[in-house]
Length: 599
Image 1 (cartoon, rainbow, N blue to C red):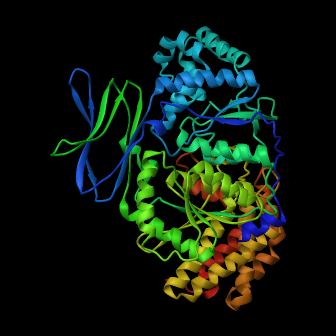
Image 2: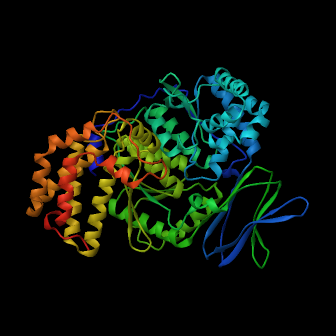
Image 3: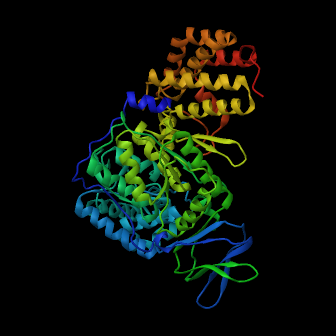
């Protein structure tokens, strides 16, 4: 609520959409996961195996011993990489002819087996003549396009200087013959194809909508983009979002309605639980899912070497609870509730049967609950949001991830200011926020310039409601007090604009952390006098602390590593104010002014 209220009073800057904008989403029309998906609801507990049967009769067990429970929905789908490559080639040429940026939007961070492979095919397609001509040299040094162009360029150091120079020149030549690429960092020449994890679809596509269909080009200017999302399962709803904006214009955050989400995510539901059941085919053959014992074939796909095959599983209990939560949310808000399910998609067709069945177990009187395919659901939801009406989206695991970035970024400018509350099957709760979608850039800037622009507001929002939830469930007054006062502190943080800046020398995450401590202590002091000394000290030393935090910026920081930094070095870098440290450490030593910890 704090974030939404702030957004209406301080609307984020949005680009203006033109009806004739060339920006668009492109997806495959055949050969993708959507078109090949098969789905099945398990009638009784069983164990299945995934087999690869080759034309000569040789059979390989890709994965065995997969235990399935009654009512579980399982799916299998494949991507034809030859059709993928052919389609990518056509789209690259289409982008060139239309004069728009070529941009690739995947989720390599979560779909860690399939999407890097798809990314690699895009890299090969864009620089195809280079990869064909120098295939032997690339293989010799282990240059793998699945790791991105940056990795390929780094591997070239293992070649003779003259050979390396020729390859680099031919890569550079492709930029004259191909469409402009969307850029991650124009100043450093880092393109969309340099690193698989640099542009992530759930963070990148909302920015495209916000920026009127544009992304940054090599000249550091916004340019309309072709957004490549290969699989139709999720591309079409983004395409609808762009079409909606062309027709109706940009959204106005000051009046925009809220879109909350009830997501199906428990017990590794859907694609996000498919990593251990995803395979890149080593040879041609038929992939079968077979019931152990009976030998019954559940799924079957005829594929060729290199194709991507995956199996997903969604258990019945999470589906039933998902429906219950949707009805609960409908009753609590009295807003329209929409299940985003596509009857033409095999998996969704199975879910629709279950949703219709489980809805009958609840009192639906006076509630507006419907099932719409994602394209229709997107248009309907955007239409409501545009005129200030709230809507509840009820989605599968991937759409949950995508929509809880899309709507917060449109409404608030970033997902890091939006709270998501997920009740757990065992009675607990998961309180999370978006990350803003650009952690690598944040770390790079911190290491290079000593400025951390990560915004922790969402973490404070999550902490406040988790404390309030704990207090309510366990009748713990102190937890409730901490939660309520932290909520007051986050409101003041927003009102006084204490969010981290992108610029060195201005407030960063450490400054924001100081202000949340100050505002929280002051809010607590009004309710409990034992916090008054802490609040007073923070208030009195404010100028000194702010100065010490600012002086820590503008120089490189050593944190002892990237993926696994040294905790002591991190603590030193994140606590550069000796004055603030002394106040906090003193409070810690005396139990925060004599207050007992929550138990």
